[in-house]
Length: 276
Image (cartoon, rainbow, N blue to C red):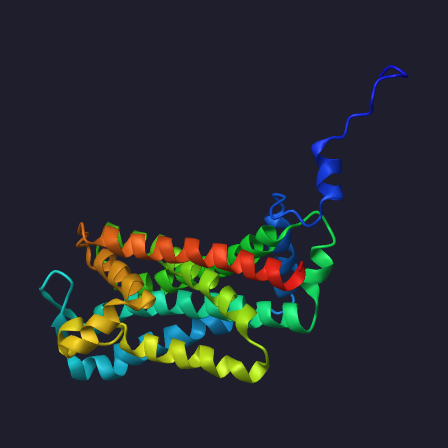
């Protein structure tokens, strides 16, 4: 460079000059951090898989023997265990994502001030959101793979279409992690997590997890169709039964739109709380 020519500022230097920019392409750094943290508490992952597996075993050797068969997605009878298993996979993905996105985000924002330190680097609010959601999705994928392995070992995988239940569970994790992170930014005290459970538990019980939609009254059935978990359950159950249908596109669209809205709202909330 000649003596009189002006110095050029590269994009890396510019990013360091603007640490409050919304996105710097460094979301993977937060995923790596989460992986290192959870490598010391790996039992948390095991607990997330054990609970739905215990449910599945209970239906296999206990309650499922009393119920017998129910009507499947294609209108044909199927065993109650095969009916419940894919729904429990979707519920497991939901629970894992919500736990990470709500509890983890809340304490990092309100107490640990982890995000404040991160935003002093070139990372932006969207990096934080995508990193947290990405880790929750990765955790949901691990849960889904483990659960699918248990289903296969129990003889509940009868069609190649069942493999698609895993990416569906990942999509469920994505949607709930995004919405969960928004909810975490709205909470003020740890006691308010009761409101999260107040939403999750009824959703788990009534999103056709244990009973087909036909058993609900018409008014309640309309409400159930609006629940995010219902769309995940319908997708996993349809693929597990090997009966893909065009209506599945509506379920996928619902979850994708929910995830996109959650990412946008979470990024705006984080930006408003920490940068203004």
